[in-house]
Image 1: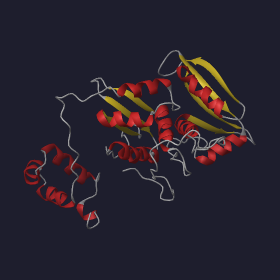
Image 2: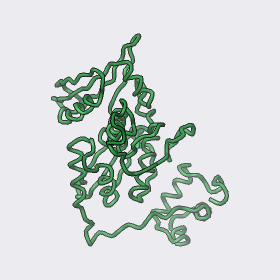
Image 3: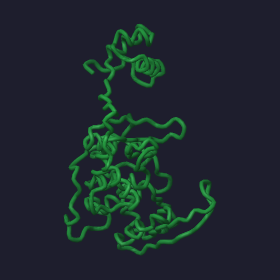
Image 4: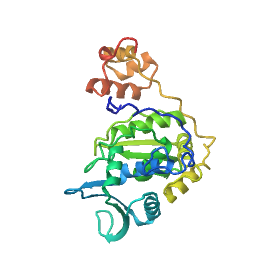
Length: 300
């Protein structure tokens, strides 16, 4: 499971699942994260924004995205009571010969100080971001994260999915905790061995429920992802598709049997598990991927 900072007082508090009404405060202050719009904006900035320091009072916050999503940058500009600009450019990248992007730039020191204080670090930040440590509208914040760094749609087999790719252990773990409350689907995250990021994926009913919860009517979001989220609602499980039962957790006594027999076929017969399950668990025990039974606290 992902590591997290024990000094964070509210890092994994789930709180109310319903969004805060937009009329909670007549005139919310800039980046008041109890306001759903600012909570979404902050999540998006954490995932896709960049705070660059400068000499003296100089510096800037910028967000560069595909020009097709420029409407969200205009929303950010309207929500920001400081001078900011939106520019466009076309350039060649590693992924496309002609990439047309839009960039929102905010230089005001007071605004940057506020955003930095809420948890958007200067410089490289992908592994350092965490959910806010002040009260915030939780599902709006997560929708901002997913709009920036996630995906929504249907797999090649037509199955609905919602996914997030993040380098932040805290953000990945928070999504897992929150989504479990919403959908009942449990996820445990681990860094991808190839590029060191976390990939959190929900499919089928869990994806439908999570998308419906995050992308509620009238919410601030990327139009194309809101459309994709709405499209998931029409999915129904085919009658021929069985429902997979919840995973059976390994108990310390089962691990002891597995290690003592040191044979996946014999262990499968003894424990009433599949050969594949025993083989993977045995490998994880031997390679230190999971704690050995003698390292597990009594009563676990």
